Image 1 (cartoon, each protein chain N blue to C red):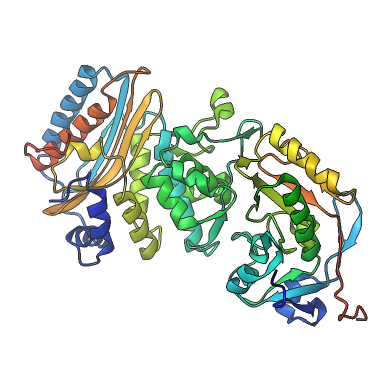
Image 2 (image 1 turned 180 degrees about the vertical axis):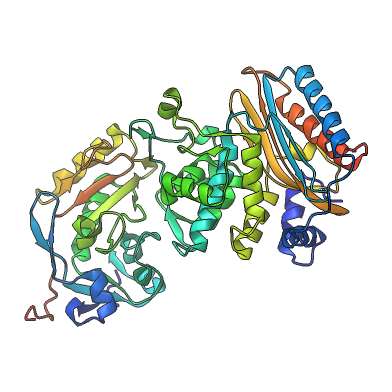
Length: 324
Length: 198
């Protein structure tokens, strides 16, 4: 019913408190209870393990890391979930958590305005750097340079459009140290936030944002749990649901699934992490991280295939995917 | 030019909540050891609509010179009246001269006009707290974000008066990298109807 590519329709539905998707999302958010682990979890785990290893081999992935938590059964799965990857844009979910935590603490209000400027300082040596408009998925944001934008709008642009400018502005505003403190307080291990994005000077010195699949899974769990206020939690999930890039996790799922997620891609990394909502059951949370040789084709398709394999293993059915 | 809305007030007569934030007439030591008195006389602005309507110079409204972000003190950000130092009239006059010289629209950035002494950027040590400084981020279609454009328009601004100071391009202290900073010094203005007797 609700294709992942129909973001406009989804936006309308989400704005309607009576919409079925929103009802599912709210229902799952409100329900911390999970059913007991299935007796067949060992089989599921072994089968999924084999299938994912085969997919990685077939698609010539240099490495994959997958973590999964099914809230329907309590089933947990981790394939090299402790391997560190360059976080790419999945790190923006950590920034999102910090921004909303800061708002919950009364440090500012989400509808406050922030000065938009493209001027940042490297985590390596404090040297000046700027993010490039042609590499940003939300070039329209650059029209606001010199003016102000609401923090909520920047958060939306950072996630839905994966804006590097918005990410750096928000991280610059709350501070790297504060964001790291928030991750610690939320008990998120396996996510190392060290700098803003496009900080090439820091990259050359090996100062990167890194994450494990297990870490990103715990980050998503923190967003769903009681770490944020109910209002913030609802807003964070709403933003993730409005993701514009849907060629990975959602592409491996049937049309009636909705996904609150965030992708991340750089030259060698291709990731997607998200919460998958299905009308007939509790959601599942997954983090799919992959690493390829630069310029290798079929990276997103590999993540979509992993997503499809996870779905099949949990629901025991062949999925008719959204991939187009 | 509409300035009939401008109501000068003596900052010393403002409610305590505002005096604590604006610190009218108080001495402030700069980073280099110089001491200056913060502005004492302000214009009282009743609303954003008013600020948009008040033209301090043909091409500059008051709102352009008082736009701040959430780094400003909450009281001065969200509730009216707002208070801006009277010397902002001189800044607007200078900006008009600059605009005439470059013959194209001149854009002042957010946080680039008046900021209160409690603003998180610069605080009371910043000359922006006198209302006599402006950060120009764009001239016509040119964004001032490199040495060439900042140098070019900095020279134009400096040529207009020896009272004007501009900052060079760079990202060290006292330099700018995404705007042109111009200021007229620590100028305070006492409206003729106001008395400086405390």
